[in-house]
Length: 441
Image (cartoon, rainbow, N blue to C red; front, side, top):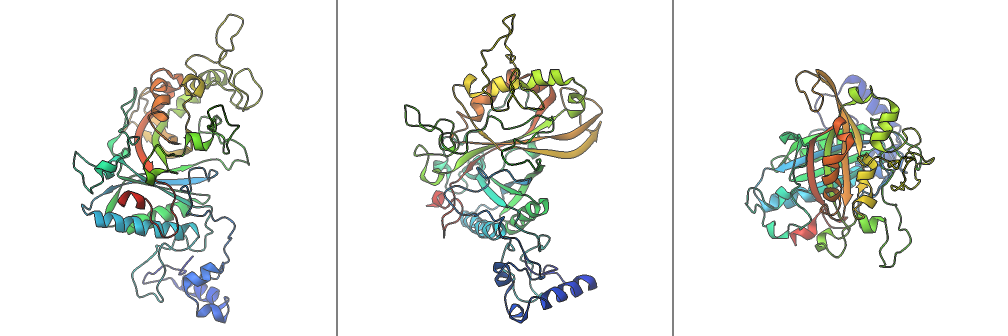
């Protein structure tokens, strides 16, 4: 994916000899080719062939990384804008658009100049790696439009009504340096180094314009096709996601449960958001050391599903209908009134739905330094769920769903929301455009 030892000054002898050998093997014509020309032919400047079948196009009607099949790893970064110049913001978005498109193709963030006596256009740690289905998804936070009542970039009047300030929910223990942000960038890939590399390059391009406010890595199981991944509690996560293709039309002409109905902004939103979505991000810490000491039967009652099959309690298959009105011989609900799936179901929330795209995270353990409710024990895993959901309006999506869940969900005794963010995710990028261009006229 570029120069074999990055545009540095002191490559090692082994790296120098290895790179020379690889370049010699690339044939005479390749010696005269630029790094980008080599990459376009499926050969990087180190002489290693790259797989081309795992490239997800960056440009399109929707941003990639929303409805894209889940990749194995993610690196999410929220940025604060430190420049007060609108022109700098536009320059940054142009650079980010160009770099994201190149990175998604397995190229370096910027075209490499000939020779080594120049500033680094890429840090180099992803050279030789395949694109690994990399997607880069951008979002605009409320602070982009105004901060402390100040219209920083002349955009305040263009803030979408759906881009609300999230309310404080019951039980929130939000940490300031894990919350908010003017811009969000999420890189997802099947290789963690590829995802990290993408965020690292975009952060480098943002010098003096924006700086990282907080980051979070995440991972998920390498699930088989059509298999729902499991979270760290061992339960399948995302079973109730809307269908990836439209279902039968209802009497009103809408696609019930489809991405068009649930995820993508339609004509009710501003033009630059049509085909976009709204992302809500929550870092949810799980008290795994206590969850692991509970019986599976109790865990299933808390969730409302069988742990191993994923089926609703009392049923056989994961995608069987919940049938929330089912009762036992004593008239008690089969799925408890405060079970997680009941409170999250569209049937109990006036049809509200979201597209979940969550990742597990593991930041190690802490010992006594931080004690999170409800358990406040000395040793805890610093692990849980990087919950990300997309919807066409957070007011009728996440907020509608979570208000009751925050108050009544039995699962809350094992979880604490410690980070949060909300972002308008613009429509996809057409050829010649930069991300969010319509917002700037």
